[in-house]
Length: 399
Image (cartoon, rainbow, N blue to C red; front, side, top):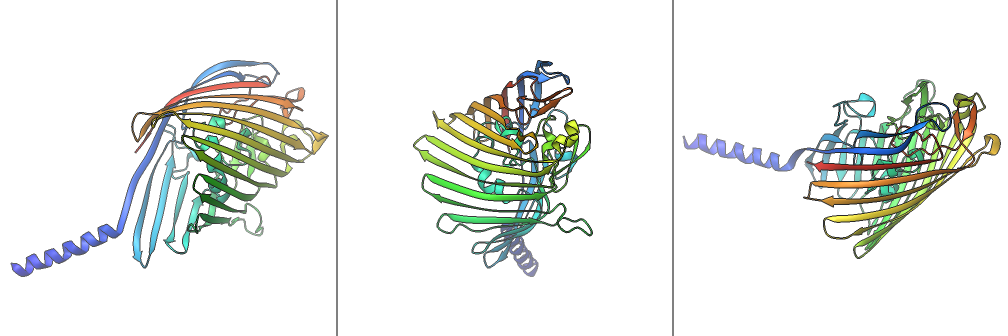
């Protein structure tokens, strides 16, 4: 009897040790809201638009559930994995093109001294290191993203077949990189993607910069239908402008910074995105292919009124240029928002976005070529005019 008890005690000890060295966590976010837009285009004629109320999921943060885990391998090294599913709370459908784990799916190793190496479907390093400075990834919801998320800082495109590295922090400095194999026989460069980025944090100041290069980021598969090549397109570009990213390559680079002063935090972001040999004009109006470039300039601030209540404001100026006809589209966008946390896991939010299209028109509307139409990111429908207002109210719960 004593031997049996001793054996059970030993087995219990080993089981406890193994349990202490490994962990698996179920986590998620449920984000649901109602969005009002003053104008959504209802036809191919300029001015044909109407207001709309619609239920929207994943506004402040994409609705998701996932599993993540680690196993201690000893010597400061651990194995890790993550499987993350995105979904629409209103109809239960999977996000990211209906994939089971469309948000993230990776496995790898992490070491306290040498950093983390992962393989799978992941976010690019540019959006990891620079995207955190944008208000759309903080308080302004996806509607507050840069025009069409053209720089991918709001992570509309995930990267498949990716090898990714993130360094430890060296006195506040860290860096990372990602490389994606194209996976097309006979054409090594097709569908390939890579990115590099770095950041530095010291007290209230944080800065980051990076670069992203994607070959063939988007391919048109039919009217209004777009197939991602290296990642999954989430629909942040309104239908009028989605063909911009049907290009031979997308090259984005930029920098961001934030500074915290008491209860206030200020941010600035600049990015430049070049779409090489874009098929936009071919698909929209039968014109030629053309290089298209967009610069985004964002400034913002948020203020913690109390420990639970924050308010924010931002302005983004988008300066575009298309080689074809030397078109120079412009977009001005203002975001205002507030967030109130009723607990550590649950909060309410209210965000308003105003966008004005200026300069040369870029949207093709039937017989009226190249008219300036406002198009708030994530809404999925451009305005029928050069202005668009969206107001979103919702609740976010994390578990």
